[in-house]
Length: 327
Ligand SMILES: Cc1cc2nc3c(=O)[nH]c(=O)nc-3n(C[C@H](O)[C@H](O)[C@H](O)COP(=O)(O)O)c2cc1C
Image 1 (cartoon, protein in one colour):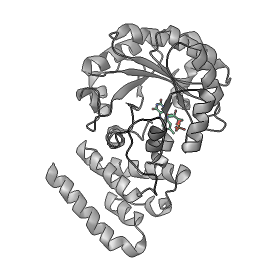
Image 2 (image 1 turned 90 degrees about the vertical axis):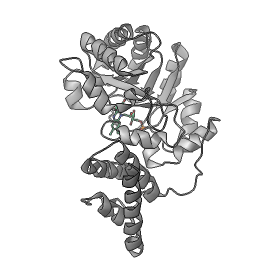
Image 3 (image 1 turned 180 degrees about the horizontal axis):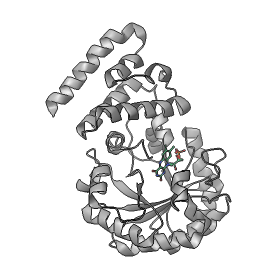
Image 4 (image 1 turned 120 degrees about the vertical axis):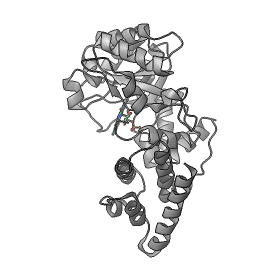
């Protein structure tokens, strides 16, 4: 998720040991192919066999429509060490769509095919090339042709966020449409959109018939959810389903951010973004206390109930000192 799941967040999420893989934030390809330094900076996992320091594989996601530039960018990413390429046909941001990227290609399905084909041709056969789709621009039934075209272009699998671009993030999500696509195409289909809890997961699974699922906001809003789903799928999991300990989760994220050398102001921004998602969609209740924090230390003090604050500050500072002395 652009602006949220950066390398530090991916390392943290990977530490849960529960995700099969993650997809990077999109790298936008416009008038020129992306240089190696952009991939190495934004997706450092490519220098670590395509995995986070915590062992989770990461697909490199690119977004754009120029066939030559997309192909060359994908090739560069692979030459740098990317082990999989995902192509974004879902981004609804006006600035991206105005420049003919993301979901704007869904208005002309053969263009989806052509972009996937160009990228597929540019990278070795053993590198999977996947496509992330919304249903269409404004027509939920456009997914049938869009998915067919992505597969015709050579997509190894497709992920479907079951909304149109025009819907943005508004309900409903059309999980049965994902199921219909799954029956028609000969590649794995990953179901995505509005899986907030185990009941949603079960309904999504039943309505789509899928075996693979992507969770975005729900993973951050409820850190237990991915474990609960993994358990349901018969995969390894570790967390119990008790109440989320937000201070521990967020302290752990700061530790991973320090490890990848994330600047302090960016860490603070990410903490606030995460808090906002967790407040909107989870049980995080301290957003009003933390949203104006100007330092990470202040953020954690404000996260703690007033009576416990002095102890929280001491605990957090000693945590940070131990991180620094490990480096
Ligand atoms: C802030 C934000 C940033 C996102 N950035 C990306 C992105 O870079 N690439 C992508 O494929 N999807 C991106 N998405 C879409 C999500 O991957 C996902 O498809 C969508 O949020 C629906 O799934 P969810 O309900 O599990 O969050 C983004 C979503 C949000 C809210």
